[in-house]
Every structure is written in structure tokens, then in C-alpha cells.
Image 1 (cartoon, rainbow, N blue to C red):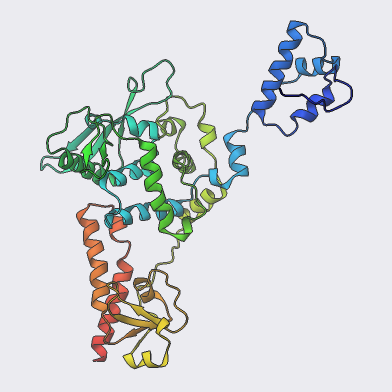
Image 2 (image 1 turned 120 degrees about the vertical axis):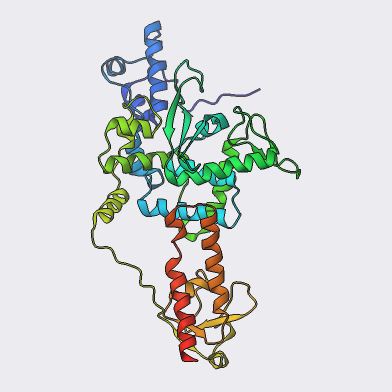
Length: 407
């Protein structure tokens, strides 16, 4: 039998205002509101034990409000919108994982819709193949894609009863087309309109199949998010909340002056009341805006800053200074200092400490870069992705040209 031990010698017969204020000073708004409701209920029931000053306080004061989105973001950097640079880096990572076949077309489309269109997991789960409307020109080329998107959180309304037709950004078109081809390949037949857009699964090591009710989007997000987070040390302290991408999109639209109606449509909302929570100009967003408005941009110099040396250089340096080719079978050169290992060997070509061997397999490095570029073209990825490593290609080519001139 449990024994209740009193904390004081005499029982408390009356709850005073000072007791109430002390009890709730460190509580959140929700707990404080619950205690207020309980005490006010006791007062209405006529129970004794509530002091007059506490009764007066409860009848004249307002219940505390939960922290607003802006207040939460002011205290937690992980809740603030991403900067433009961070969004570009995240997109670049997603596309790199897709090019390397770590991400399937389904994974790629998932993150493209989250990052570029700010769709929520509940919306992604409800999307069907029949929601996609592809518009082609006279030659059969895809010129735009519309998607009927569910508007979630509508009171007393079925999730798919209220839909909004939305035109996808051009960068997402290749991802949509790749996913439709992926679904058809897995199904082995034409898809019906009711097939969930995210439905390719692999159960218990069996071949890929189509889940009739779709797959668990939260699980897919958690699994693929880990790949993104582990892709770069720069992402170690970043939380990839899906709601954060929505806030980022609406914030950056507000920066360039988008009206409330545009913000509501971009956020898949019918109301503009809550938009002030999303339109929050963070320091990061402001810096990105200033950078975007700056007319003077520093171009990356596509020149080789290292030195070309003979393989004899190797005899006077430690083996740890050597830098291997992409295939790890040969040595392309060495580092005049301690190798940092950042994106070696490709990143080394932009470093002034790199010593490229005259007989090194630099063509192998160039072939690796060209392969990735051609694959990005074949996947119809955005132009900025295709051209991302062009300056590296130019640097490696410059090394090969210099060696040929020396010889």
C-alpha cells in the first residue's frame, strides 16, 4: 500500500496568488492554461480553498499564449528559414546523390517537391498518378506540368476533396517524368490514375513492387534525409525539418515582394491569416537577399594555381602527401603540405599546394568529371547542376594542356 508523506507539517488549506505564480513561472503556456482552467472550474463549483486575490487574478487576467513561430525562431536557429546558399547546397547534394544512383527517381522527386515546392508529407502521401497533367507542344516536348495538390487541414473536409491545381517549377519536371517512368518499369504495365505517386517499395529483400496504398512517406523522408545529412560536414548542425523548407520558400517570396495571395498559393493554403508567421526576414535570408541584389559578383577563376612537377618529387616527400586518382590505382600528384582530403583528387586541382605529376593520370580525372556532367544532362537535371563542375573541368584541362606544352 502506498503511503502519502506530507511535505509540510500542516496541510495547505488555501491556494494563494503567490503560490499560483510561483508554480507557473517556469511552466509552458499549455500547462499554465490547464491549471487556470482547473482553478476556475473549482471557483464555479463553489469549492473553498481559493484565496480572493487569486480569484481576482484569474477573473481579470488573460491566459498565456503559446510562443509564436517568430518567437520560436528567435530562440532556435534550427527553426529559421534556410539561406539561399544553404538551399543551393542542399539541392546540389540531392542531385549529386541522384547522379551517383544513391537516390532512386522516387527519392529524388520526394526531395525536389519538399525543397522546390515546399510540399508537406501529408500532401505527398495523398498524391496520385492521375493528379499529374503533362502539357506538350506540337513536337511532343514537355513544356509544363500541372499537379492537383490536396489542401490539407480543411475542417470537416476529406483530404482529397479540396484540391488546388499547381504548376510545377521547370526544375521539377525532369524529376516527375523520371518517377513516372520508374513506376511504369516497376509495375511492368501502364499505371491507373489511382496509383499513389510514391509507391515503389522493396519488402524483405524481394524485387521492387508497387504498394497499392502507397508507402509511408515519413519513413522515406527519414531514410533519405540521413544520406543528405551525412553527405557533407557542413550539414552536421542542420535540421532538415520539412516545415522549415515551407517557411524558407514563403520567406524568400516575401523578400522579393510577393503579395499575400501568391504566398497563400505557394504554401497550398486558402487563408492568409497565418502567413505572417511564415514571412520572417531572418538574418540569413537578409544576407542572401543583399547578395542577390549585389551587381558585382566575383567569378571563379578557371585557372590552375598549383605546379606541374616530375615524379621525382615523390622521392623527397612522405607517402601520405601523395594523391590518388579516382580509381585509387595511380597517383595524380602530391600535396606540398599535409593533404586535407577535401574532395580529393578533384578538389586538389584548384589548390595552390597541389603538385601535379607530368605523367599522372589526369585524363582519368577529366573523364570522371565529364561522365558526371553527361549523366546530369541525360537525366535532364537543371542547367545549374549540369554546369556546376564546369570550372573544375576547365582546370583539369588546363593541367593537361600545360603538360602537353612542356613536352
